[in-house]
Image (cartoon, rainbow, N blue to C red; front, side, top):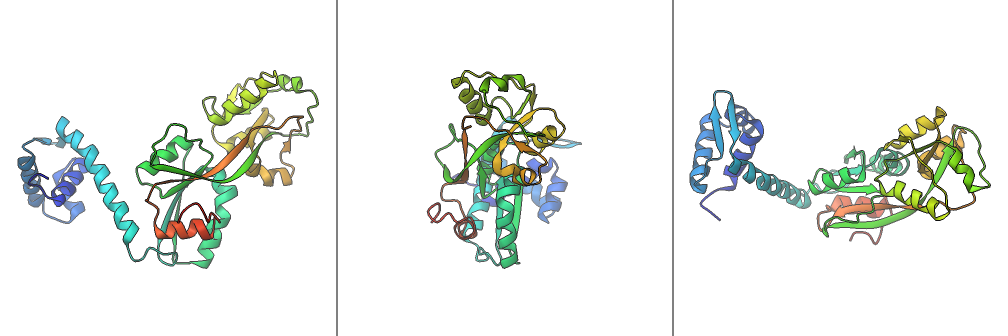
Amino acid sequence: MLNTSLDWYKYFYEVAKSKSYTDASNKMFVTKQAVTDTIKKLESGLDTKLFHRSNNGVKLTKEGEELLKYIEKALDLIEVGEKLVVTKNDLDTGEITIGSLSHISAFYLMPYIEKVRKEHKGLNVKLITAPNGKELIRLLEEHKIDFAVDTTKLDNYSSQIIKEKIKDISNIFISNKPIEIKDLKELENYNFILGLSYTSTSKRLISTLKENEINIKSKTEIDITELKVNAVKRGMGIGYVLKDAVKNELKNKEVFEVKIPIELPISSLNLIYLKDQLTRVDKTFINEYLGLKTAVK
């Protein structure tokens, strides 16, 4: 390592994010002169200019922008390491940050979160929802969440990402009135409300129907289940959703499962996390509340 200090990189990070020596000094509770001197020492140690200075603040040089990418990752990993070893890391005083889609959070995660919070009142639980699985993976890789629960297939992701199957869930067609399809060709007469065409869920549905010589087109694509259900209730078409996500609506007869003579594709609900980066409190919650005894040890 060059003649530099980790603290210097923390100063660099704060200046880069604040774009101001003054703002960085306020955030770090040090004098502006201390920030100025530290950045000078860092630039001297690296023999590289990191900031352009002006009356409006500071701006990263190209070299500074490149360095920032690595410093952000390094500081994130330090934070993860601290979280993994702190003594308060248990269900009574710890913290869990979970990522999921909103409808999966509602039908699957909320009962477990409710239970663990009742039994461990000092536990801090953060639930972060994302619009799709790709965004959840980004949050995971940037250490914004501890683990995710989703139906993402993970075909082209890093080997550091681990996927453990939780359970299979049926996908169904739903309508705002009872419909029974006896001849699959009848499906081609309906309007459909599907997820975005590039998603694996939509692709597998279209592929399954094509195997049965059925071609359907969706003129309404919605990537959020709650909005798909709302569109179905409005009579805009037949929706395609996870059955567990609409169990209350089915029970209350707000929507109806469309009866068809074939089985639709099954989705796997998965636990997704980074290798060796689950905390003790994460593991305890996953094992004792989600019931995944073999998933994480």
